[in-house]
Amino acid sequence: MHIQPMSQIIDAVPSQYPNKILCGHHNISSRLQVMKITNIPHWSFERVIFPGEIRLFEAVPKAILEIYDGNGVTTVPCQQISCKTIQLQTFPNSK
Figure 1 (cartoon, rainbow, N blue to C red):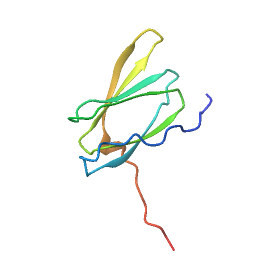
Figure 2 (cartoon, rainbow, N blue to C red):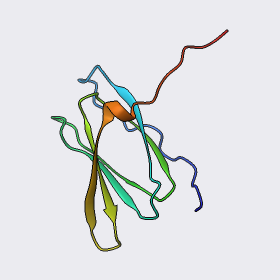
Figure 3 (spheres, rainbow, N blue to C red):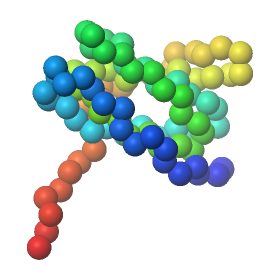
């Protein structure tokens, strides 16, 4: 499997949501996937993610990431993931 480099680093959450977190999803399947967040009022997120691609995105802790597998004709729901569980860790600068 060929791993593609990251593209489009951040998809911003509107400023009305102050508690933003940085999350990541890696499409380890051999199929195209669609990522969606639809449970946050006044904001929706939908992106295509190719096989092997890693996508970083902003969300709020209560957001649910829905993953749909593409089969060339349609998409099939396959996962729901709490964004809090895929939040990337940040580490303080060490000197």
